[in-house]
Image 1 (cartoon, rainbow, N blue to C red):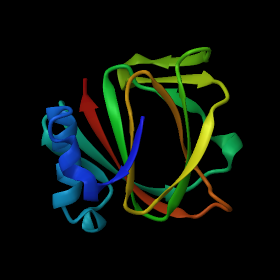
Image 2 (image 1 turned 90 degrees about the horizontal axis):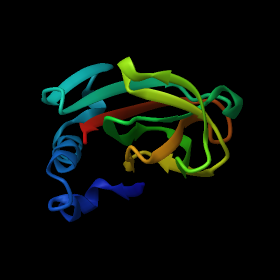
Image 3 (image 1 turned 90 degrees about the vertical axis):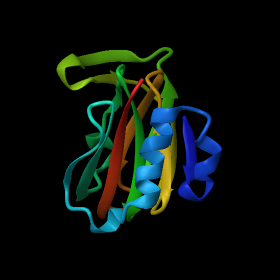
Image 4 (image 1 turned 180 degrees about the vertical axis):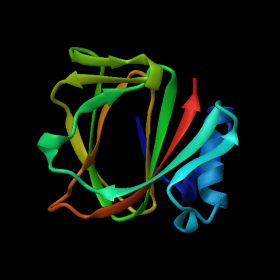
Length: 148
């Protein structure tokens, strides 16, 4: 897992070409103006999902992971609490391979993401997005999916 801001974009240039494409899209696009929906960056290899929703109570949020795609979760407006842990020791509760999402029961570490920050969750990372920080509030977020 990585937590950072787009000010450090060039650090990721040599790390992974597809990951860099996704981060570059976030940096070079007026993401605040994008309506909710899917945006192609490089076909099904790299694409962005613009989301706007109300953050949820922690008990409404589940641990999840993706085996095909790495997530870049970028907060455009608002703040959100997220969770992270490795897949070691988690208990799988649901498989949705057609959507590349797998759900788990687990405990893990939690942190707050603010506007302008991104988190990268690789296939070995369970994560728990969408949680309210202090109270439920609106958020705009972009999830860039990067095939690995």
